Picture (cartoon, one colour):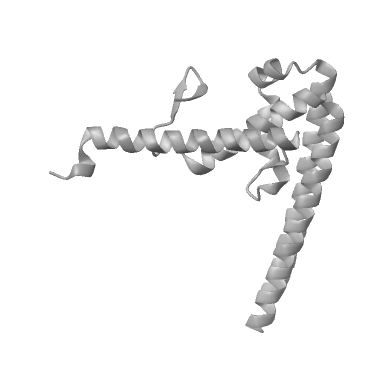
Length: 177
């Protein structure tokens, strides 16, 4: 009988992974509290659209105590972000399409790398600008908590997934076990 296939071993491994994950999250919160802010642009995987979707959820609005005027401004910022990000993508993909017409493969690869690099720089700038605008809309404690929740969501999604059974959906709400 394979030792790793036993239920007791699976439970131990899941418990170890859970403890490691939670200690990493709590350490991340301690570091963020030391800096007194959470910089979401540090993570290259951070998605502003996910952040706007998160801010648009009713339970998140209740937790942050977002008022109607703030909701309107957040929706406007989200719309503006989507328009500008689509323009950045369109520019990048038109440059890539133009590069692919070139017969010189090394030049083609350099042009594609340059277009992707420009896209990444543009998105980083757009993300920073949008987060600054959100900081002007949300009160300091609201912005801090929203960024903490978004960072936790990213960390859980990135490091745990559902492979170890940490998530459960009950009545349309995602619960972390």
